[in-house]
Length: 289
Image 1: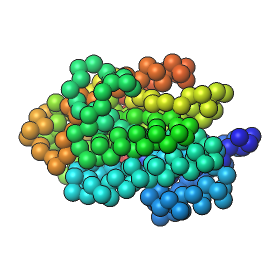
Image 2: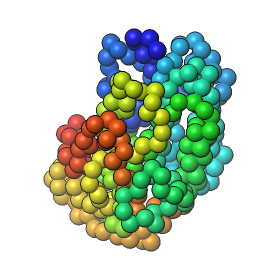
Image 3: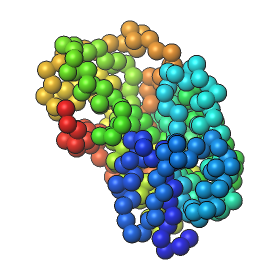
C-alpha cells in the first residue's frame, strides 16, 4: 500500500459514513466518500470500474438496506444491496488486494442467548434483513478477499434518522410514549464505531487482522432504558412507559437479546469502548432540538 491510503466509504451519507468522514480527515488518507447515487454497490461493473480508476486500498462498506420492516416485503431489493452488493465490493477488493471493512449487524442472531454474544456463537437470523446481512457475511468470507467484518447494534448518531432523533421528535408532539422494554441490547454511537474503524486502518498489522469482530458501546439496555436516558439527559417532559414487544407488533421479528461481546475487538486494538450512556450524552450535546 502507498503511504497515503486510498479509502472508499460506501453509503457515505448514512450515520456511520458521515462519522467516518470526520474521523478519517487526515493527510494519511485520500477519502472517496460516495452515496448510492454516486456508486451503486449492486452494480458490479460500476464497482469494478471505480476500484480500477482510483486504486482503492481500503473499502469501508457502510452501504446497506436497513429498512428492517420494509425488507419483509422487499426481499429482493434487500438482498441486492446486502448480499450482492457485498459480493461486488469483496470481488473488487480481492482483485486489487485491497482490504474490505464491512459493517454487519446483531440481527444475525435470534435473541435466544442469555449472555453477551461472541463472534463464533451460532447465527440464526429471524428477519429478511438479518438473513440478507448474514448472507453478505458468508459471501465476503467465501470471496477470499482480506476482510474485517464488524457486527454492531442499535446504531445512532447526530447525523441521519435513528432512535434518538425519533424520541426527540415524538417528545415534541406527544404527552406520553410507549417504548419496548423486553428487547435487550447495547446502543452504539456511530462516532465511537468510526473511531474503532480508524484504529483498524492505522494498525501496523492491518493485513493480519482479517475476521469477524463485535463492536457496541459497553453496558446493556432495553429500548425503554435508552428512551429514559434520552429523556433524562435532555430533560424532556414527555412520559415514557414500558411496553412489551407483543403490544407493538412489527412485520420483522427482532432478536429479544442481542448484547454483543466485544472482548476480541478490544484486545486486538488495545482499546476501551465507552459506556453507552456517556456516548449518548456526547451525541445529544450535538443535536439541536
